[in-house]
Amino acid sequence: MQDEQAVRRIFETVDKNRDGNIDHTELQSALSNGIGTPFNTRTVQLMISMFDQDRNGTIDFREFVYLFKYVQDWQRCFRQYDQDRSGLLDAREFQSALSCFGYRLSPCFIKMMIGRFDRNKQGQIAFDDFIFACVCLQILTNSFRRYDINRNGYAQFSFEEFLSSAMSIII
Image 1 (cartoon, rainbow, N blue to C red):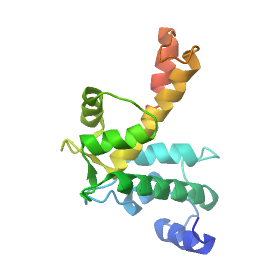
Image 2: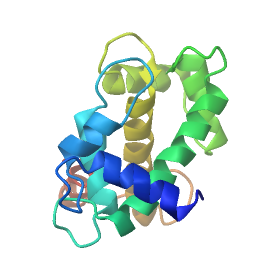
Image 3: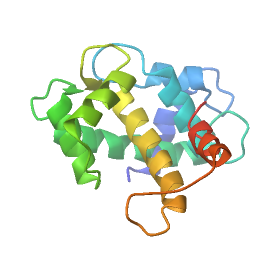
């Protein structure tokens, strides 16, 4: 990971009001999705909820160190699969990325995911939407695995168990 002083300087730049914490507005204004549009608000809120250990709705420096590394890791992954360097993942690139993570999803399902997570309706996934899609997929996968007792891709659960899993990704 980068030198802590360099990360500290980045944190201080992002912390516009100098209160020692970064809220979702400050974080959103600091992040770039690579295509010139504001970073997806839902992705920012999801990342804050993931790294906000004290649950105060903001990120302090200690929490920011982990969030910063997380974003860098996702950025490396995104760039690896953005083969045409467009700043967007088309269906083929997105499917390759998900396959690398162990997901074997049909082209039809990939198109459905792109339709669901592509907030710019371009038929492609921007960096911030990629993070959101992957995190949602991981949360749902983890929930599903709890009920996939035989590890065969099939699960049985009650309606309330399903709702609990689905609501875990709703912000």
